Length: 135
Image 1 (cartoon, one colour):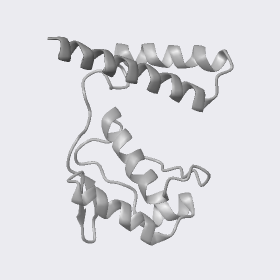
Image 2: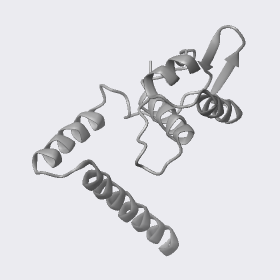
Image 3: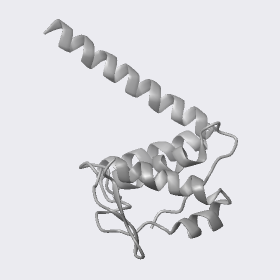
Image 4: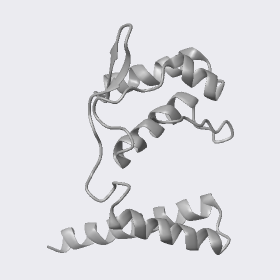
């Protein structure tokens, strides 16, 4: 089950954070098709956000085809976003975990690590785009 954490200082609306955390759990395989999401009441108790905020996030995910709201039963995952290599036991995940530990041990903060990863992804994407244009 996913445990939502809301960063009130991020500037990102709470409902968007709930959707993003759910999508991340779907990509990582933490949530699978058929899994039940926490009830809105449970999310409100854990995060202290307004119940309408949770319901908006759940409605947005339902409209995106990720979950299904079943009256009286709860909200269930209907689609996975997992890709090979993202599983908990994958070699790629192990390498990234080790790299993250080295980065944190070197004194990098979370934002620094995210900036490095984003920069590396951007450079890779730009390189691939240049190769496609040259072809």
